[in-house]
Each structure stands twice: as structure tokens, then as C-alpha cells.
Image (cartoon, rainbow, N blue to C red; front, side, top):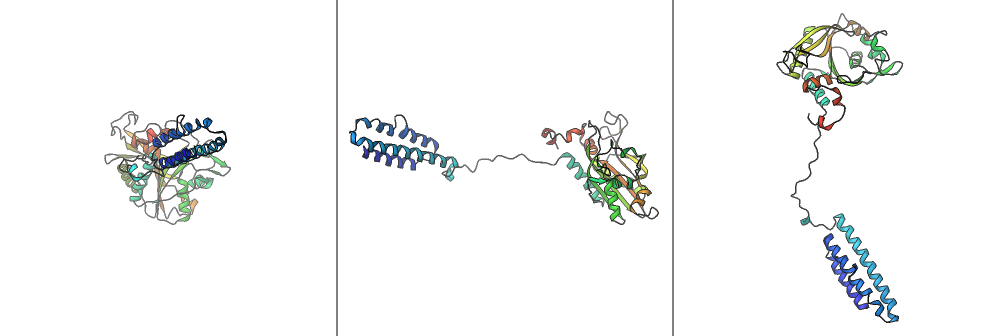
Length: 336
């Protein structure tokens, strides 16, 4: 019996050493530990042994069975970890799995395009804090205390004199405080207003504002710059018009419209059959703004303009609901 046990042990050592796959390993397990395996066969012969030989034979059989189970489990772990795979078993010519491609958000794409146009015209990019003081958001921009935009229902106040900026005009003030003319800069960034969210309004959106200050600047310079911008942004056939308007920080002020990019000025549902679409506000810097930052209105003249990035993106891509930009629906975003 003991000789038979040693023979099976040696046979198992050879078999387990040649195992190269899970299927082969399972065949070895059945061969030795199965119901009709070699170990079970020897176990069935124990009762026929002489009484004094049974204990030693039983111990050796149990030791062999435990050894076989342990080595089978170790070999299985090795195979599952891939440590035993040879180079020939890995097909390096098979195509890999291509990860999904990322892309810029449509607002970021539009913002980059706007910035690129104005940078090509000599403007520098300036940024400022989104949490502001009343002075920069209102007082320095000729917005008095009684103005409705300073009401708590129209502005996100953090505390009495601190708020989330409602426009990037605050950066214009900060630049003029620290810089002597000439100035030619744009101010992109997020702004906040407690508007009810609907297809055309959001409590957070993006703006790009521009400022030019020098000794000899005319309103005609503003028209020329914005004409170049509209044509580069919406196409060479796009026309622009200026309508009189009012903003506290510019005087005179104007609303700038472009010929409808859908109907080319003929009139359609998008432009309410007027042939024109409003895109931004602009004007000559109000002398009171210069006084607030220590500039002499007699010495310097300034031009300012501002636009909503979401508005530009909606017109450029034919989007009719601003909420689509912020819902993170990949089906929408991957179109851009």
C-alpha cells in the first residue's frame, strides 16, 4: 500500500508540473480526487489491510490527499493571475479597445472662439474674482443704491456688501484701478443672477466683456471692431446694426443686432420675423466710471461691450434651450 501511495505521489508531481491551462488542471483533479479517482481507489482498499498496517496507510493517504488539494489550489491561482502564460498564448496582433474620445464643452468651444477673435485684434485676456464687493459690481459702474439691480431679489448677496458678480464689468474697474491707459482687454468668465430657469435664462451663465481706453478713441472704432467680430463669428455675409439703448456705465449706449443667421434677414420664427437677432450691448464709457477709478474724462475716452456666451452659442449652433448646456446629457454634448 505504501509503495502504491508513493507511486501516485510521484505521478501527481509530474502531472501538475505539466499543467498549462485550467482545463488540464480540472482533468488532474478528477484523476486524483474524483469519486473514482486514484486516491478514492486506495481508500476503498484500506478495510482489506491487516489491522496493524491500517493506521500508517490511512495517515499517508490523508497526507497525500491534502497535498494534492493544496498544490491544485496553488496552481489554479497561478494560472488565473496569468503568471504562467507564455508569449505565444497572448495574441499581440489583436486590436485593442479604443477609449471614448473626450471633447470640449460647446460653451468652452464658443468661448475659445470669441477669445481668439479678439486676441487677433490686439486684445489681452483679463480675469477677476467671482465674489465681489458692491463697489466693483455697482458703485464704480455708475449704478446707484436705488437702482433695481441692487435689490436682494436681483443679486446673489453673500453678506451686506459682498455678492456673486452679476457681470464681468467688475474686471474692467479692477484693470483701470491698476493700469494706466492705453488699455485693450476682454474679460471672460462666469456671472450669477437669480433668474428663474427656463429655455432662455439661467442663474449662472458666461459673459465676455471688452474695454478700450486711450486718448483718441471714437465710437466708429467700436463699430469697426464689432463688425469684424460678427463676420468672423457668424460668417462674412452677416450684417450688424446698432440701436440706441441705455446702460448706466456707457453713454451713449447701443444694442447690437446681427442679420438673422437662419433666414439671412428675410424674416423667420427665430428672429420673430424681424430679420435681426440681438447679440450684445456696447457704448462709450460713461465719464462717471472714469471718475470712480481716477481717470480724467477730459483726457481719456473709452469703449466697452459685453455679450452672453450662451446666447452666442445658441445662435451659432441653432440651440433653442439654454438648459441643454448644463444637463450633461452626453447625447447632446457629443454633437459638438
